[in-house]
Image (cartoon, rainbow, N blue to C red; front, top):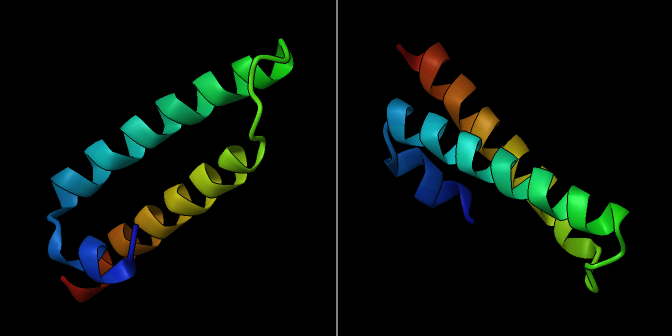
Length: 64
C-alpha cells in the first residue's frame, strides 16, 4: 500500500482500513502462536501498513 493511494482516501475510509488491517494482524498473530503461519514477515508488513494508514489519518487531521 503506497502513501499516494492513502492520501486519496477519505478519513472514514482510512479508519475502516485500519480496523480491517488490525483484524488481519490479530489473525496472523494467532496463527503464528499455534505455528500455522509459514511466512512470519507478513506480521511486520501488516504493522507497517497500519502505521502508514495512521500517519495518513494524522496528516488529514492536521490539514483540516
